[in-house]
Length: 240
Length: 240
Image 1 (cartoon, rainbow over the protein chains, first blue to last red):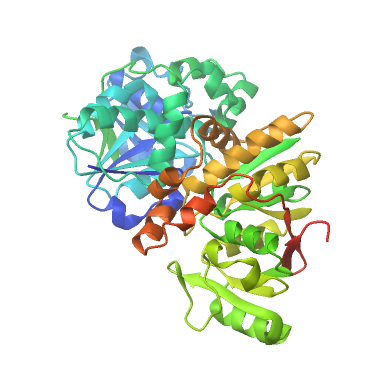
Image 2 (image 1 turned 90 degrees about the vertical axis):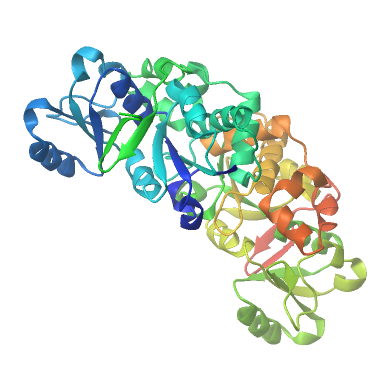
């Protein structure tokens, strides 16, 4: 198995994505929230690039069992049902619902990743499930959403812990690109904790708006054993 | 002192560069070669974006004491005097000469970096000298040239060791961005060695064309106590 990581969507090599399983990582907070929502019974999550597109899509899906979710600058979009705080996505709130989600950073990564054979969403909260799911694949691309097209250390750390787990589970790995080597090295010396995430640009921004409590959940490794996979327009539980 | 690192030129925030000292890192091999040339008596190095531009500039500078240097795909450009192998840049070859240098990866970084207050070139070979030189500055931007606009682990490791040294030398550092935090963490668990550099994409490419021996020199920390600084068009020894 070959493993390539990318710290920003701009760096992705389309030739490598083609034929690979792509795993998108956006720890603070899009993929953490997606995992939380699916683990708590949401039927599917529809990522969109803008709030306008989200409103249109929700109307076309049928507003009665669809929730509008999303943030701008970390806070819930006005008039939306939910923001992007994973703690909001409880079973009571999202069970049986379709979620249309507009996020700042995750969207471009999901777009780029759709060129792969499969597209999964990974956070610390479902790390082990994703590692087992992809361990038998030929090629793995770990795509960090980053923060506004910049390197994000929280995503890099999650990518590194995923790569470590995959290398433990896969029969044979060979050929890590520079970013995969660096992410794995980072994971060798750092564990996800609220304190670690609080140092990151994404974490600091959350703390600044009073949502630092989200970081406890974002740092919880293997909180759920679920695999989130993109199918057509929506991210759903794999195997469903 | 605030420290921001960037793993690719595309990620650089112009507002951060403005008012900061910029240090460009391109371990394999542009900045290693620049340091070697200046330590061995070259009068100045003129980086250019293309071989055609290099030929024109060399003609305008006066061909008699100017050497044309540069590589494409790692090998010396046909008709040029020197390639980009630091081992070529001996005192006999470059003493007293002006060098016009066309490199694949370093050029964009030097262009972006010129918006800063000062622009220095750093490699493992002059790490300590650069750290002392910048330790009193207000803001430091460490700009990794990377490899074809992608993350390069050799540059990230050098950036990390530089940041560690600067933090030891500076009276007070505060505010590292995510890339600076990650580079420092990488430097905490990895040292530059030929074996380490051989794993990187840049190192593997050199080994593949029989130039793996360059990596021993590229990995040699504090081989020279020189600071290389851009002034107008040329990189020269600082203080000259």
